[in-house]
Amino acid sequence: MEEVLKLLKDCGYYFIATIDGDKPRVRPFGTAEIFEGKLYIQTGKKKNVSKQIEANSNVEICAFKDGKWIRISGSLVRDERIEAKKYMLDQNPDLRSMYNENDDNTEVLYFEKGTAVISSFTEEPKIINF
Image (cartoon, rainbow, N blue to C red):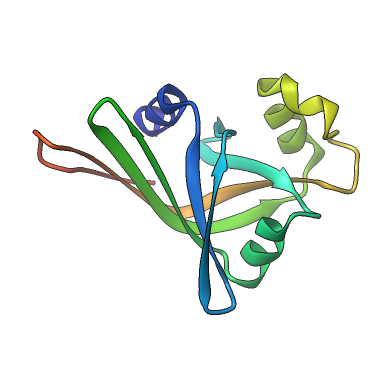
């Protein structure tokens, strides 16, 4: 999982795909961390992406840099614990201007049964299940 996180961090941002009714929705994200052995992302509960994940927790992430890309698919689970929210915000302090672990908006989610596929134009794909 460290390799997955490193590639996401190296890319700087990634795109997350959700489902809105019967339509796909894709938007850029930047937060990803490993907390208690799980890959977490962060968003706000007031955002459409949060509502879409609540309705259908299956998502896919994609990022690309220097001829290498990663696709991560799986189901996201909301973690309401203050400790998880605080960890994510401590690792991403620029988000503190918008979020606080004690507010009613901050949302952190982790992948349950995630699969990452790391690909390039020159190497065989590498599959990492977590």
